[in-house]
Amino acid sequence: MKIVGIEPKNFKTHVFSAFKLPRLAMPLLGTLLKDKGYKVKVFLEEWAPINEDVIKNADIVMISTITSTANRAYKLADYYKKKYKKTIIMGGPHVSFLPEEALSYADFVIRGEGEKSLLKLIDHIEKGKDDFSSIPNLSYKKDGKVYHNPLDERFIDLNDLPMPDYTLVEGFNPNKLKIYPISTSRGCPYNCIFCSVVSMFGRKYRFRDNELVLEELKTVKKGQHVFFYDDNFVANKERTKILLEEMIRKNFKGTWSAQVRIDVYKDKELLKLMKRSNCVLLYVGLESINPETLKFYKKGITPLQIKEGIETIHKYGIKLHGMFVIGADTDTKESILANLDFSKKIELDSVQFLILTPIPGTILFKNFLEDKRIITTNWDYYDGHHVVFQPKNMSPLELQDLAFKLFKGFYSYKSALKYLLKGNWDNAAIHFLGRKLTRKGEKERKDFIKTLSKV
Image: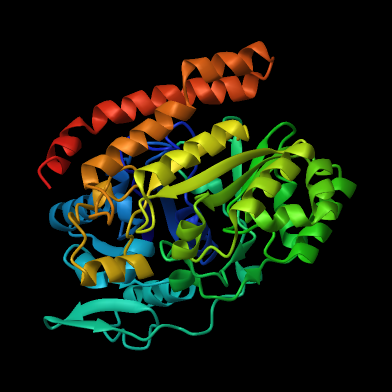
């Protein structure tokens, strides 16, 4: 059979608009299917447009979606199903938690981790079977009734997954792939109220063997940058140290960045290994410097740890991208603006000030839904740049205005020039780019702001 995989995009300007980073689901699933003998083509809309001729000749169309791309995903699914009579399979975080919504557009929805279920489903379809009750994680309609099969409690062994074959992706050019994505783990023991990782992948960390990660790193070219997609790259510090030691021993030629918790600063041996293995940037979820907001988010860190962590990481010559989330019930205008003052004073290299967003599958979504605080379910706006709920201590419009103030206050021509005069070209470029994207995003959101003024 011929199978097409699609990862749709949100066409609005967002914090990563300048960096075309693909989600790994479709390249990975496509590789699994290719290895089983199927003819596979993958379209990542961040990289290239969808070729409709390929869709016409396909037997099955798979579409993966997060919440902010759900409307685009549904539009594509509806179009291909009605015009070309294609069998549509949907998966990803959004439809995992709203499968019945997705079944208005798709034939099948795979909830949660999808690799094992997808292979079984494709096999059933190919053999003409019409009993899907044995396939875990599957939601589907039959005779007008919706069925939700139980979730498989046995998560996949990550060592059984292949290295993603990017040649399956339309528009892939290895010479133009400046940032190479690698995933080495899944799961998270923490329980931040705005995050759906635990609901998708469980509370227990699972890791790929270091040997497999090192094998994939061999494909990285000299000067190429690797971004480790893990939600917490140093979840198991000893395992990470061994990996970094091997990267140093094998003379890793590229540079790398990853997401970590701020408490990584306490392990000086780990920081030394990060620097020696060519780590140039760490993405850290700081969320807020308001202690009450940190408790509200259940972060398990303190403002003092945030300050000490940033200063320590900088001492090792590693840049830090601080990620803040504004709009908690404990937030006031003053506490939100304090995040900006802190970011500038401590000289964070780059930041993102995202608006608290109740994504389906999170504790936050459940609570806000019950309290009737969600003001729109237009999923296009669930990107962290639009206020979609009623804040506790201010109006939605006031929170939206604060988000603009934070970005404009941090990314300015003045700050870019400051770095330029210091000879720090990278930070200067980031600040110029941040200013450009902020202005573009502000213009795009004018109509949305008009709707907020009426709430």
